[in-house]
Length: 103
Image 1 (tube, rainbow, N blue to C red):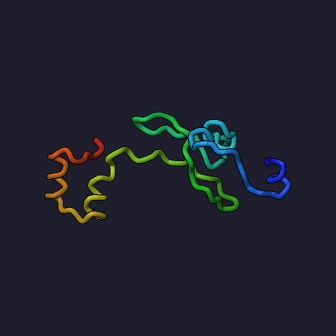
Image 2 (tube, rainbow, N blue to C red; image 1 turned 30 degrees about the vertical axis):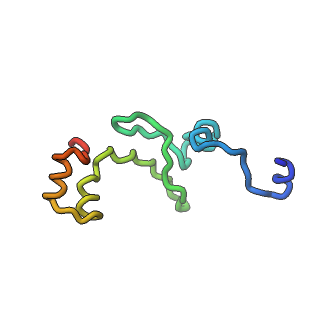
Image 3 (cartoon, rainbow, N blue to C red; image 1 turned 180 degrees about the horizontal axis):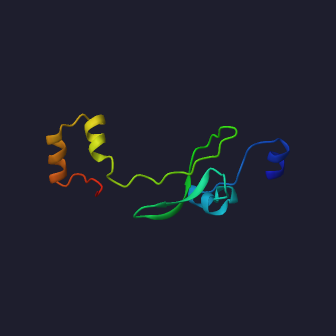
């Protein structure tokens, strides 16, 4: 079947989980100015991380930033997205319903 797909110029690949693809496919490994780069995520470790897929001609691709720390945006999401008041947010924090990132 692979030969038939290749002959017909069909875009195909054997099934792999995302974890398998990132670990096994050399195109996903950090290689200079590629989409994936090795990034240190504070408190978690170093992982191959995707950056911007598009590229502007003549510009170098910027390195991918680390993911935000868990809880970093909790208060902003509660306030700006859910419309909660400061009192409601404080109550949720006191009750242990959520946490904010230290710092």
